[in-house]
Length: 249
Image 1 (cartoon, rainbow, N blue to C red):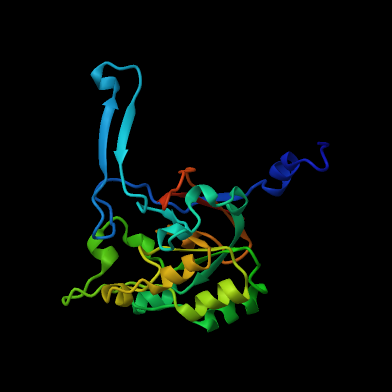
Image 2 (cartoon, rainbow, N blue to C red):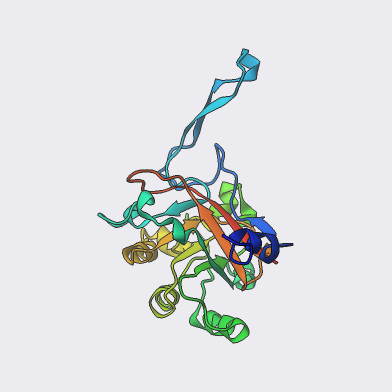
């Protein structure tokens, strides 16, 4: 490769001065989690305090732990597994739909088609094969489980989420690759409280994937950024903690 065509040159010039924003929570025992999941178990197998020359932990977690990726097989029998998601999808244009002001006034708020219209009026058409993240600023409640689930006295969860019409517009009409959000579920709390996870099922039924429990979307511009998302290559895996990074100016 010569200097003019080398990706090293792109790194040295195109990414010069770029900001790298970590969109992931550090996971740990006691963090917010789906109610049927066990808590994380962590054991120190080797440690300096025990006279060992190195440190090693054993982690016991469910796949959907902390900031994590959901492949199609998480909800769809026979769907693609973690090791079948191509690495070419780990670097994508990042689009942020911001409904944080509405969420601040109404925890049950959801995006509308007008949010897409307004975003495109400012930035142009949402790119094909992009990653669309829903900004709600819900991540700021982490790691307080009570504030994260935001249950009313009757036990109903009040959290923002997606809508079917917006997801259809993004995946079918715009041809995006994946979505992400700051809350613990794709579906709003009013739906999950009634036992419905229809929107998550819909996304994964399209053979697409998603990342849940993103953080710091408020530090990233709504257009022009890239997202770098990665996860371990678990054979047959139905989910795993993910590391997501926004690259932007």
